[in-house]
Length: 393
Image 1 (cartoon, rainbow, N blue to C red):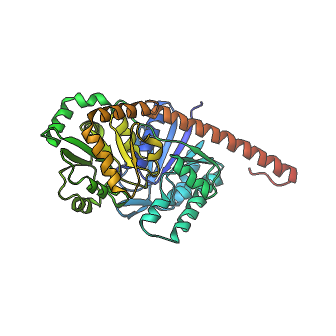
Image 2 (image 1 turned 180 degrees about the vertical axis):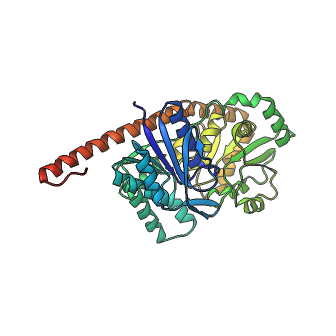
Image 3 (image 1 turned 90 degrees about the horizontal axis):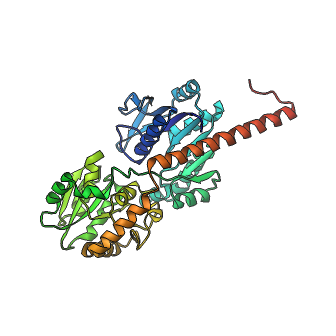
């Protein structure tokens, strides 16, 4: 695998922290560690000028629901033309990514697009009706321009195949197996946090993620009245007031947004992890919880279907059945042996999913895409020659 020049065009980057930003950072860390070259193009929202030794270029953006949305700008074409990457990596492409893919095609650069948004789920939740078809047409239009689209789950693959995309491969996400580790339960920081969260030795049920309408954290209201249970919520976002109202009467500790060792300690202080959103194309926090040795209760929808082996490392509940959610959590809270067995199974399930391994897979996708693009380009030139057409200089 030769050293590559990679242009990563992302709809989200630091200081915004979400699944897109986190996976882009992991890819950049890998590229830096293995001697590759890269640049980042992202919306202007206070991003650093460099990351991992790579230049970060910000382009104009507008704010939408607290998120910066990159706007098409001639700067994107100039940056790609000047850097001359071997491949363009479009992370969750929307307006900025669509322009980058179009520019790359004009410049003769292959593109790999990373699908990360559950369009169908978003449309259903917001009752968009006819707009759903329009949203999928936009997705198809954007991804049709890329030489390859990488989907994170079997559900996402099915959705993209249904709208007619064919150049598809699966590519999941990695997890930090050292940061999130069952041994952290014995650390001084974890013991201290557990005393705060469960002063009487209660079972701690945790949620980690953004507190936003699409995350449906209000579903935790199903745990109302469970004895010997404390709920801990890690994260922040616009839905905090509505979630607070929904969980009135439940013993809840809000830890706010955490990262690094603080986040790893929060996972380690939990006994059970609950995922509530039904619009996840993957479900990174599920992998982190499994890596930390926690059983997971999640909806039978989207990405979690691939990550939770029902009855082995957790339970999958029907998305609209909060009684089922409650029953599965209750079963885990009253049965320590079941928690232990499922937690160990969860850890085993992610042992082959380090970020280094996952990013190595990504580079194989890059290489295959570059090779296929070169072959297609050469074939096109042969056909033009045979037809007597002028060749590009």
